[in-house]
Length: 172
Image 1: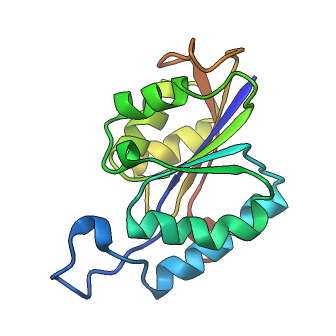
Image 2: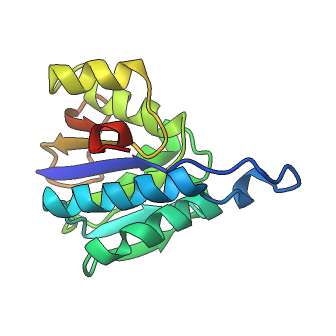
Image 3: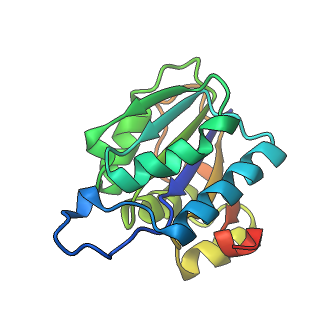
């Protein structure tokens, strides 16, 4: 059994129009939401062995706020995750070592949303599926379980959506 957590970066700032998209930082609301998500991860004992993080400033800042609760997770920054299509994200998951049981990807939409919808393909928590189908707000976390014994054999529609948590669910 494999676990996948897909975290969309927290809310970013648009205050400086001269910044390239990849350089946009978190805003105040985003920092609060990322801290609330860190508390949620701790409360739910979500302990990824590997964290795959986009190289954008906002995803790295989101990760920085989660680090205190991630224990000894291996942190890997990957350029391919920035603005990635769901197929690219799935291909990256397939590269994980078989002994990894739980992964957290910190990335962007629409790739994360499409990956979550494609992996679950309507299977899982009715409430979570309905909420995910509505939208994937910044700072939101999708939790999926997959029966695959290894990452390499994972395919679309091979998982169940177990949870979908938005910052607003956590009081943010």
